[in-house]
Image (cartoon, rainbow, N blue to C red; front, side, top):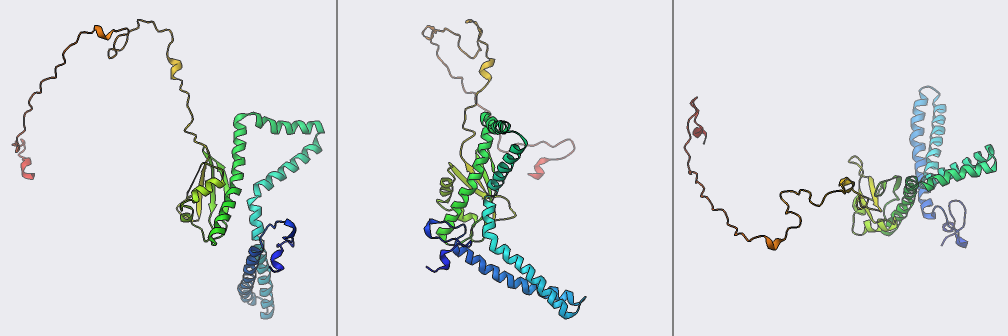
Length: 309
């Protein structure tokens, strides 16, 4: 193994059990793309800028200005492409980063504006009240599951790509809670399609990765084939028992000799005391047969329907 392959993009060595944020092959691939994008941007933007600037300035000054503008814009493109793997990691952990910053800065602000006992009381109320109220607690847990599912799907997609050796890691978009579980929108990158996820066993792998009961994948719209929707089912909201209020409206003080419906036998009837009566079937009355060719009568206005028969 070469020396360059044992170092991460941040200069950390893989020896000693340390884990890199971005793998070395991925960093080299993006670095090659960034170099190509830099020279292409420098050539195209520099030529166009020099052509436009030459109409207003001296051709030599216009050419130099075009080269400078092309180099600046190429450097920006180079930096974006090289930093894209790191930016993608920040995107995956963006909700957690924002939540952590809010907790840290919120605690700092509370400590600076109130005494210690007041800060602890505020924290106890902020944490304890939602935990004690059932609907609020379940809502908070639903959003926590949304954050967890995004990372589980990313790990599952990475395993798919590593197994098939083609495709790029998709972009995991925001997730929202549903009555049955979670719903996640995903933007597929080149190399993956909805048909790949619909193959035998892929849905079960997604369900196992998300710790769910069932996973359904479908297109999120008709405009873009890359935008898909993943519905994760953890519970069956329609399988729960619904308490009906109808028995509460039935009166409890009904007398024993209350009148019953004519279609029901009287209460306390002894069936052996009922005399046997022969049941006779009604005689079938012969039906009149219609003539095969019925005669039609002309209407008073002279219209005869048989003319259109």
